Amino acid sequence: MTQRSRSKDWSKFLVVVDRIMRVYSEFNASILVKHEAESISLGNIFFLISIGEGEHKVSDIVRRGRYIGSNATYAIKALLASGLITRRQDANDRRNALISWTTEGAALVKDIEISSTDTTGYCRESWEILEALENHFARRVAA
Image (cartoon, rainbow, N blue to C red; front, top):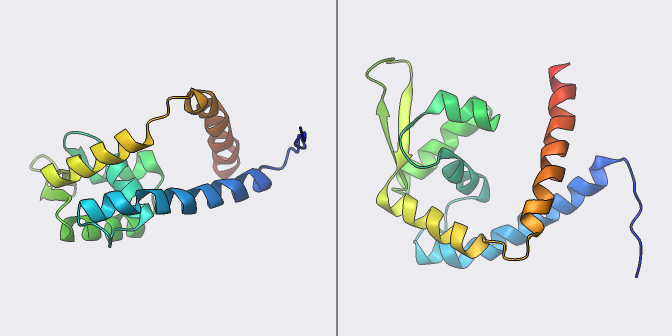
C-alpha cells in the first residue's frame, strides 16, 4: 500500500477537494434533471442547501456561509427563477429579505441529502479535518 505524504500544505488537499466538487456535480446531475433544475449551478445548490429549513434572513445566510453579497444575490435570483425558494421583505427590518425553500426546493434538497448520505462513517471522520481546514484559513483571513 502506498503511503501518502504527510504534507503540511493544504493546497494539495484542496486540489483533491476541487476534483471532488466536479465529481459531486456530475453525481447530482440526474437529481437535478428529475427536479427540472438542470440549469442550477453547483454553487447555487450549495447556497440552497445552506438556507436550511424555515425562513431565514439573507444577511444571516451570507454571514454564516461567508458568501460575497453579489454571489448571494445571483444565487437568490437563480433559485427564485427556478421556483426553488421564496423571498419576501422582513417586516421587522425592511433592509433585510427573508428567504425559504419552496416545496420544490425542499424536495430537491431532500433528494440530494438522501443520495449523499454516508453509510461508511467516513463523513463523520472527515468533518473534523474539514473544520480544521476552514479554521486554518479563517484565522489567517481575520488576522
